[in-house]
Length: 526
Image 1 (cartoon, rainbow, N blue to C red):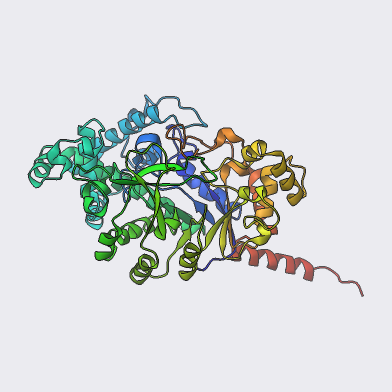
Image 2 (image 1 turned 90 degrees about the vertical axis):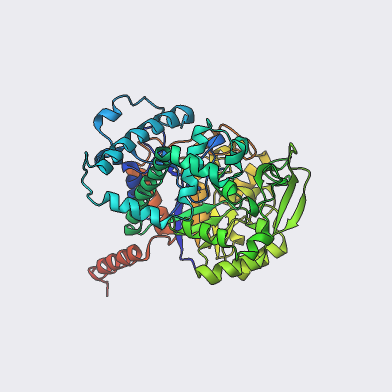
C-alpha cells in the first residue's frame, strides 16, 4: 500500500458527544469530520464497528460483518421521520464524559424499538417519511448482504429469546442449527428477526452517509479487523467447521499472547482458533467475504495481531492465564497472496507490535504493508530504539499511543524516573506540555502517517484511558466533552500539520500560491 504524508486522529465513535449517553453517527459525528478537515487532518481511525457484547469491547463482537446498533443516531432518526419528538420525552440525563453502558443500552434499544414501529407503519402504508424510496433501499440492502445478514439477525433474535445466553447454552436443536428447529423459530419469531435486520439497515445507512461526507472533505477512514472473532458470535455459530471446537461446540484451544509489555501473565483473549487448513481448502472464502464487508465501511484496515498470520499463541481451553501455551504456524504468505489475487492491492496496516520475528517482518514486507510504531515505547531503552522517531522507516504508521496504551500524559506521569528523563532530553522539553511535545516530535518524523488518540490532543490524564489490556470490564467508556473542539485546538493542530508538511496537497498548493503572490507584491530592494 502506497502512502502519502498525512496525519490523523484515533477516536472511536462511542467517544463522540451525543444526547443519548454514547457517541453516535449523528450531528456531532459530522461536526467531528469538519474539525478534522479544518485542522488539516486526512485520517480518522476507529476501532471495530461491530455489535458489542459482554464487556462492551469492540474486539469481542457478535458479528465480524454487522454494525453496532448503539451507534445509531436518534437525532438523525427524528430528522428522517423514523422517530417522533414524543419518543424522546423520557430521555434520561447521561454523563457527558463517560459511557454508562447498562443504562445506555437499555435506552438505545427502547428508542430503536420505537423507531422500528414507525418503520413497520411505513411498510403497512399508514405512515410516510421524506424518503419515498426507503422500502426499496431496505430490500436492496437485504439482497446485497444475504451472505451474513439473515443468519446474524436470526442469531440475535435467538439470543434475545434466550435472555442473552451464549449460543452454546441454547436448546440443543438451535445450538446445532438443525433445519427443522431453525425453520420453526424463523416462522414464530419473524418480527424479532426483522427488527435485527432493520437495525443493520439503519446502521449502514447512517454510517454510509457519514463516510460519504468524510470523503467529500478528503478524510479517509482507517478501520480495524481483529484477527480473531468472539466465540459467542454468529460467525462461530454458523461456521463451526472453521474453528477448533469439540463435539459440544466448546473451544478446544483459544487465542491470546504470552507475557509481554502489557501484562506479566500474557493476555488470555479466549477467542476460538481457526482451522487454517479448512480455510485454505475453501480459498479463504470466509475471510474474503469479511475483508470485503469491512472495506465497504472503511478505506484502510489495521489488521490487528498481524503476527498471528505467521504464528499464533495457542492456549488450552480452560487455562486461567496465557502463560502456558505454544506457538503454532498460521497461514503465512499464502493467505495474503490469495487475498491480493481476489481483492487487488491490500489497503492494510500491519499491527506488528510486541515480539516480532524475522518471518513476520518478511511477510509484512513481501506485501508492501506498513507496520506500526508507538512513541510511548521508545524511552525504556537507548537512542538505537526502533520506536524513536529518528529510527523510523518512511513507510510506517506512527502513534503516540493507541487505545491499548495509557494516554501520553498518564504514561509520562507513571513512567520511571529514568524514562521521564530520557524523554525530556530527547524532546528537549521540560515535560510541562508532554502530550503536545510528543505529538510534535512524532509529526516531524519521516513516518508517512502519524496519528494520536484524541485524548492526547486534549492533554488528558490516565482517567481518560480507553482500555486496560487483560481486564474484562471498565473499559471503552471515555467520551469527549462537547466543548472540546475549540478554535484554539483547531488552529494549533492545523499549524502543526502545516509545519511538518502533513496538510492535504490541495491546501499546501493554495498556501504556496498565496505566499508567492505576497512575495511578488513586495518591492524588492536594488
